[in-house]
Image (cartoon, rainbow, N blue to C red):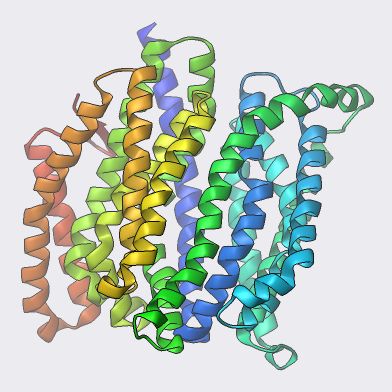
Length: 504
């Protein structure tokens, strides 16, 4: 029995490692592209592009959020007959709905935007929801089958195609109104090409026969039942960004900012700083991807010990990854922003708001856990409660803390949602989980203090003598090593070669 447990744990760890390798590579390429894009577009145009992208995310969420998770759970629990046909029908119908909403209401949307260029960018982006409807369904089947190599390869491929298309279109810049439209069109074209390739890979190996087409009729109801609350929660989250994208510039302008300054601040925060704050989510999303089918199967089989063990380790690992990066971001934020974007303000935001990584990541992993345990509706309600704090912050705080009101609101929203999620998870699995998370958070926070102080001290001394890059490299490494050493000394994390084990 113990041998089987070890083998299962090893397989799960290998799956997480494989997904993480692809995720890190994909995000790294995407991150470099984002740096390039921010330098090409500039802060103001980047802000306009981000506003349009935030509205587009709502339409993409409608098609590609709850449905893939629902499909993967059906496949993981061996209930997949006809699921591809049903999934494609549902996602195509949602795509038509999304496009219909946009084209029917584009005049109203144009009045909401602070800049008229946003609506033209959004119109270029929205056709890609049709590609997403095919792309997400097929990858969801691979997800449920635990074919993580295919998941990683196709996501990496989509990112590479997007960059290639942008570079090619950049050579034809004279055909476009502005560079942001090139970025939008490259996104759409890349999504369509990736969807065609994924569909070819899938249907070359499989065929849809009449029996499976008939079986699809039995899949619509369970897919809707599972996907609806997840999609609802993510739609709520997605709707928040367009509302914020309109409200934040408006509230900043009412506080005395110029329109250009408000758009630039939004572009810097969302286009430059926020991607850095979401770096831990790259690893956490890998963990979530591997966790969902494993946890769904264990919970269906009523293997309570396995469920509790996986939940505890997932939460501890989430905290560890965030606190590992926190000291470097706090101590070296301004230098990081200057080095990556030639924009010191983005680095100052990074130092000030690095703490927000923790509730954002906790919300992500607790949502994944609740979705695996069949509590999608509860996760949606918890996020809705937290969203009240987000909108209150965006509306009332810009007068006092400027663009920082957005990150403070996000942090408050995710903190409230995470706490409510954890209480429910504890009720479903193990009552001690909430105490464990609180204890781990406080312990990691205390261990961060020496690392932050070391980073600040050494960076201030070394910068005038060895330059920005060398100072960031040496001081960042120092904060990392000190934090890991303290974790090992206090027996919080044990290192055995390349393996990391958390103490109970």
